[in-house]
Image (cartoon, rainbow, N blue to C red; front, side, top):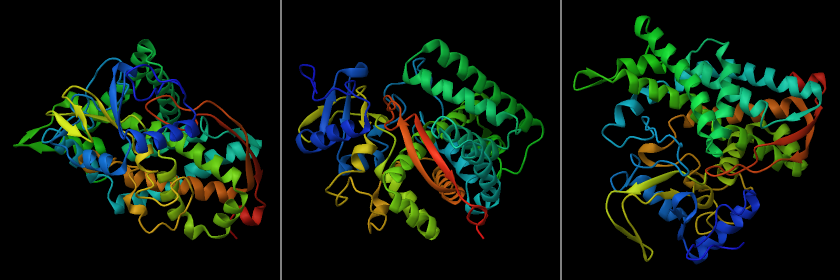
Length: 403
């Protein structure tokens, strides 16, 4: 890799996950606090210790200036991701309220039915792009059910959010605006409906946000719309990549495929290790609230600092044989696949359930599957496959029904 003069690395030289992880291995050892002039210039933290510390220090490493590299080309700021405490807290509290264990328990059978149906379409056909098809459609159903949207919204959300993500990666302002406005309209309609006819705040994010109070005053309605608009897309970015990465891994390891089919009780642990191994983010960012010296480098306010979770989760100082799949890791709870601190993924419990259901249903419905073709890797700020064409061998009736 040719690095531009005065840069520690060039993130634009490749989007291949394997090549990127080789870059991160080099940076962790040689230059763990690295700088590049790409994407307007930013720092990259690659060691687990540094990423964990920065994610946990919301006073020093703030989110209100820059939360991702590259940024939305329009520079919009939406809660809770782009807010610091205390402004961030009521939005996060309202969303967390709707993700408690009892609510997830009621959602699980509904979401399992969606996973089974969407996978069934591809498996009956014998092949398909599991990232662009199931990886987009199933998360749209998860978001639709969590937000209590009308069911006809799910396919619209899948198409719109996918187009928005692609345009955002390419910094295509016109398409970003068009797709974003469609999602804003979904959020506005949802807020208008719940303002007139609210649901139980424990089971409905829009109603929870509308019920939230700060010093006795409600949240600004346009900020509530922004928070819901953000919720419509954040759950649509990572799942296609992670689902594809898991399928690619299992295609290359048929013994593991067979083992998980015959030992489904081990799937939750496997999911956790897959999240560590194939963390799909390299560009979540902060800025510092004051000048910071870190490992001999000076970071100044306004300079974006990316927390490279994908690199931190393969740090050999924390995870033995970090590039290997080992679901029995005693310290798996140390992975940063969902972030840490105040801005840890709000939908983490829902995401874990979604990935578990996807893997359970995929393994139940198939006798085997293999990758036919891998497309291009995701552009910054993600890492991983965005296109994965898979051939499926359907399970026999007895296996498919679990009898």
